[in-house]
Every structure is written in C-alpha cells, then in structure tokens.
Amino acid sequence: MGRQKVVALAGVDVDIPAGSFTVIMGPSGSGKSTLLYLMGGLDRPTSGSILVNGTAIEKMDENDLAIYRRKTMGFIFQSFNLISSMSAQENAAFPMRFAGVPAAERQKRAFDLLKLVGLEKRAHHKPTELSGGQQQRVAVARALVNNPGIILADEPTGNLDTSSGLSVMHLLSDLHHNGRTLVVVTHDPRMVRFATHVIYLLDGSVVTAEQYHSALESLEEQENSSDEVKA
Ligand SMILES: Nc1ncnc2c1ncn2[C@@H]1O[C@H](COP(=O)(O)OP(=O)(O)OP(=O)(O)O)[C@@H](O)[C@H]1O
Ligand SMILES: [Mg+2]
Image 1 (tube, protein in one colour):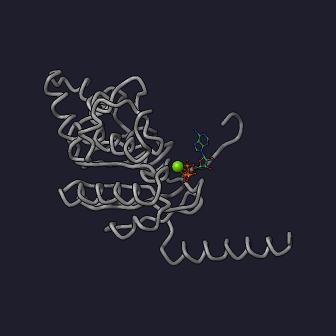
Image 2 (tube, helix red, strand yellow; image 1 turned 45 degrees about the vertical axis):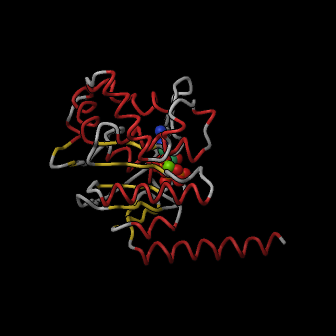
C-alpha cells in the first residue's frame, strides 16, 4: 500500500485434501480472505506456489486462469455480491453466460439450483426483495451453477442471523457430502462441527489449535484487565 509494505501472509504451507470440508479460522486481519483469494486465483502471491489439482495457478495468465476458475471453482462472498438489477434466477444463471451454455439451459439450471436452496418461489425477486439469508442462498446457487468441484466461501454466514446462518451451514455440509471440496472462512465456531479439517491463522501464519486457543485466551485476559483499568 503506497510506500508501506503489508505482509498479509508469510510462510504459509497448507494442504487441503480433495473432498475435505476445511474451515479457516482467525481474528480479523489475520489473512483469511487473502489465503482464500490466493487459493481461488483471485489474487497472486509475491512468492511461493499454489497447486490446485496439481496445476500451479500462479503461473497461468489471466485468461487461462479465468477459464480454469470457471470450470473448477465456485465462490461465495461475505457480502453476497449479487447484481441488484437482476432477479434471483438471473443472478444464479449469470456465471454460465461465459461458459457457452445456451440461454434456455442456463435458466433451467439456475431454477433447479434455486430449488435446491429452497428459493424456487423467489426466483423472480430482486435481491432487495430478499432477506439476507435468502440472498446468501442465491449466492450459493450461483457458486454451484457451473458444477465446480471446489467451493470457496468467505464468511458465508457472517451477515446472517443465527438460524439463517445454520441453514447455510447445512447447505454447505450437503455439498461436502455430495463429494465437493469446501474451504470456508468463518468466525462462527458452529461451522467447526461440519469440518473435517481446521486451519488456524494468526498474524498471517498458520498455527496449531493449541497455539491459537492460548493466544486468544491471553488476548481476552489483556482486554479484561484493560477494561478494569478503564473502570
Ligand atoms: N489490498 C490490500 N492492500 C494492503 N493491505 C491489505 C490489502 N488487503 C488486506 N490487507 C492487509 O492484509 C492483512 C490480511 O487481510 P485479510 O483481508 O486477509 O484479513 P482477514 O483475516 O480476512 O480479516 P477479516 O476477518 O477482518 O475479514 C491485514 O492486515 C490487511 O490490513
Ligand atoms: Mg476477510
């Protein structure tokens, strides 16, 4: 950033097994989104390598990477990123435009996926006419529309109330049981119940569960004692 160098991740060495439900946990600013974006080829590393199904994605040019991403990966963003002028169905169908799928087939597939996420009755509603949880389910449908083997999600339940959050978690868990690989960034400890693997990040580095929990505990103690000082 300008003249200031920000190290978002350093010395991260992780292996995400195919077919796993991997959760990435860490405090704000620890590098979770950066790691997810690197895995998904939305960001490029300054050094190191990212192998997806054996392919070093940092070596691909933008065009090849875009095609590869479309075939292989689906993204679910924290803020849904839906297009406000389009209906739920048009949003879900959108990524297929670039995949050469005929229009009628696009609409059918998008509708089938809206059914899967329980939104067939809302297919023609615009995002502003949907609740947060419903918008997030449209985003899940959109991520699935090109039938990717890998799903990357950044805080998919971050903007949702408790029960909508849980229904999105169950939806993600179903995708995992259907054979997909999921990588999910979350603050929500409930997500860990669905996970087969957990990666803990602190200050841009991967740490063990023990290191993570003891660091969080000492942070909390510090906060408590500074509250006492203030009081
Ligand atoms: N485009 C950028 N330019 C400069 N620094 C950045 C940029 N994006 C992120 N950072 C910095 O990199 C670090 C990691 O950011 P990242 O967004 O990966 O964190 P995060 O773990 O996803 O946090 P949060 O839970 O708040 O979303 C932070 O210190 C952040 O300030
Ligand atoms: Mg983030």
